[in-house]
Amino acid sequence: MSYSEDLVERVRDLLHENEGLTEKQMFGGLAFMLNGNMACGVVGQELMVRVGPENYDEALSERYTRPMDYTGRPLKGMVYVEEDAIAADLDGWVNRGVEFAGNLPPK
Image (cartoon, rainbow, N blue to C red):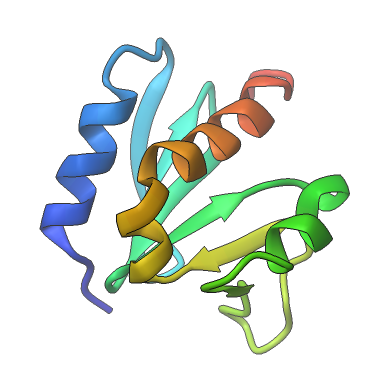
């Protein structure tokens, strides 16, 4: 699967000051890792965000989100964020992923 290079660049711009940032091909897209832990990524035209199990239901209650179901089964703690939500608050969504990944021990 391909991914939006424009969205990838926008996410890179938001994350460039984070130490321990790497990129990795995952889930048919490009994932952004902080100290080895996935924070967010781009799949197609959508953002995937790791919000964690405790924030999962809240994230899904927001418009333009849905469970991340790459394998056919939802991955609890991971959501897809559609283009309309990205346009309204890309920074906020990326920060949610950074906050969750930043609280995990480095890999």
